[in-house]
Amino acid sequence: MGGLQETMHRSLRSEIEQNRKKHGYTLSKLGELTGINPGSLSEILNGDPPRAITIGQLDALAKVFGYDSGWLYELYTEECILEGRISRPRLIPYLIRCVEVGRKDCIEATVPKMMENPKNIMILFALAEQLYEKGQMKESVRFYEYVIQNEKDSYSDHFVMSQYQLFRVVLGTNAEENWENVIRFSPYRNRLPENYQLDALYQLAKICFALQKWERSEQYGDELRLLADTVYRHELDRMKRNKKDESLKTERHLVYYYGLGHLYKSVSLEMQGLYEEAKKYVQVYADLGWFELLDEEGRKEVERFKVWAKANSYTLEVLSGNASIIEEYADYLDSLPTNEVLAGLNAIMKSANTYHFCVDEILERFASRIASFDQFTEAIGLDRHLRFRYQMALYEFGKGRTERGIEETIYCLSLADLTNRHDETLTYIALFGWLGNMNKRIGNQNRLGG
Image (cartoon, rainbow, N blue to C red):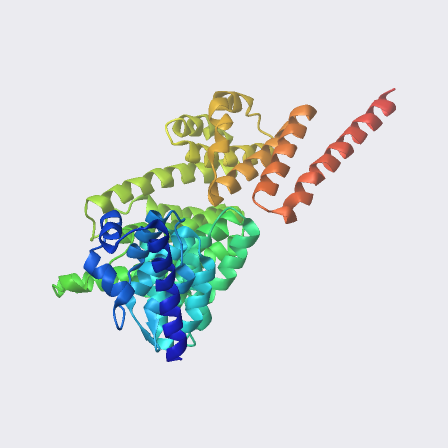
């Protein structure tokens, strides 16, 4: 083993030495060009044993010799792992640089050597977290996967956190992949610390709502409500005992999770047609001013929930068939952001199709907003847009405006393809069959009239 390592050391250093001689550089000149102290260069190339080289120094040499980033990376592992012992100060920067320059081959060759000692799994987790915190979410995925693949204890903190971080990172707009992601992560949600569990339940409720899995969204909303209430009581008790250092650190204010649990409960019930039951939960988040742990951020969240509650109260009235408030609702929507307008128009169009209202004036009024719905690229927005276009197709066909109905149907098919919701495609194709049957009935009536 020692002979092989010496060969690898000589191979790395012989490449550097050959290039130094090829360019005719003295150690002093090479030091000047690279910014590496000539004495350090001498110890790296000629020391016995040789001084370890950092990945930054190797990159500096590559640049001077005219090579691309990643030069000799395949030989660098031995600088990090020697006789089973790992140098974290060299290994982590090396793996990060491998990520940055696309040397996946080096990562895949290094990880098995690390895993000869199972304790080194913590280095992989630390690296994944470092990439995640730097905003390199996609790059962190492979390292979280390494942790999951190599950790035998599925209850260990880093295993469960890797499952959670992986769940968040890979969420996208592909409905099939998002559902697989929910199924993969869901069994681990209750093993997370409470502060992360709050956010995990919110994400699960949100993505299941976007996938139109109403009962699952309701389930996670219920779990979020109960957990937020439990944490709230614990926090109140902690304050009474003046234990400020034990405060639970959450990504958002606690009132946010408390309100969202009730919100997702209400909207999931709404989507199941249980409007009266949904109203009970809207009333809860309509006024959360009683929450005792509010700071400035918390008070802003309370105000947001007031807005959402008012909009959702209108929604439930309209869906229940109350046509008298549609104009009032439209006035209110006019003052809201476009994403709230989309949600509101969804309710208006669904009600119009159910109770045969004419809402042409509403559609004309919001024409410019409707034209901007293509801006939504996240799962919830795409789902709402798809449902809106479906209701629009039904409405236009119902009004006898065949060409517009066909345009909206094609829009549905396009959005379904974009989000990989091919299982719903038949629903939208069926609109053409509905149109054919309607035309056949009209033709029969004309013949009978003749």
